[in-house]
Length: 244
Ligand code: BJW
Ligand code: ZN
Image 1 (tube, rainbow, N blue to C red):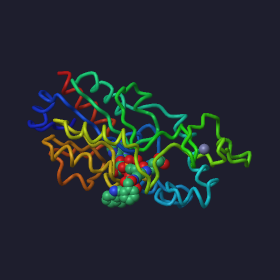
Image 2 (image 1 turned 90 degrees about the vertical axis):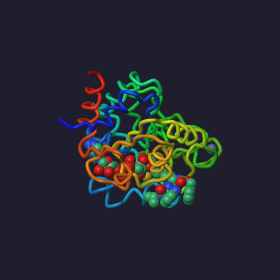
Image 3 (image 1 turned 60 degrees about the vertical axis):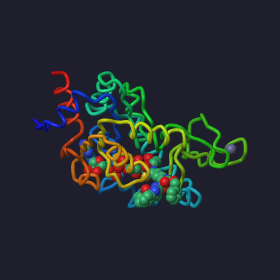
Image 4 (image 1 turned 45 degrees about the horizontal axis):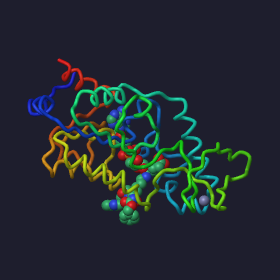
């Protein structure tokens, strides 16, 4: 049982605008590997070596192999109590926005409606050259890399290091962070920008900042309240408090 500090209790009772930023940690209990730490390594590569334009240009087959490996995992998993609690919170608060760095689609699968996917979605593909969406299945085992009508290579529709995020989604994420009275940062190492700046923006604009993570992060120093533990256990406990 967690202890909810009295100032957070008060915020839970009075907050009208709530925003949440999630990272890979919220999907860990569903069985999706996180990026950093031992289990984030795939064939000894760090995400910083695979999630880049350069990696794709140099070795598209290998980058696709990583994405198809992850797609297969994601196809087999289900949302966990952390995801489902955020669906309940969306119904509870007057204004509720979910900003996610995750590309796994598990928030939408759980039933969350207002989800801002900052880093794209792993199940979508697009053309590397003209960005046109590509709807067909990807089969790299055939040895034939799919190409667009324009001749460009097909890539996952996600945001790699050094790439711009969708301006529309980013602006939405900034504005909901600015207006939040209460902001939750859940299961993110909070080192990848601009996502990692959202909690600080919320705090600067007066929000009460709550962090939920297994371990301290760069946000822990500015958070008003840090819960160290699993999001699939802590979020339901917070929701229980709200229902009482
Ligand atoms: C649990 C748990 C449980 C486990 N319960 N918790 C400002 C300062 C410095 C650098 C930059 C800056 N602005 C931009 C940059 C450059 C760069 C960047 O941020 N670099 C840093 C690494 C230094 N950013 C970019 O390039 C971005 N683009 C951009 O800014 O464009 C403009 C620009 C261009 C060029 C120069 C300057 C500006 C794009 C970033 C794209 C990130 N893409 C990826 C891959 C997406 C596709 C894919 O999935 O393959 O996004 S990288 C990867 O990291 C992925 C994630 O969304 C992201 C964040 O990771 P996340 O979610 O935090 O996961 P982990 O694994 O790191 O952490 C998991 C956490 O969960 C841990 O803390 C655990 O403890 C915890 N946990 N189990 C609770 N059960
Ligand atoms: Zn094209």
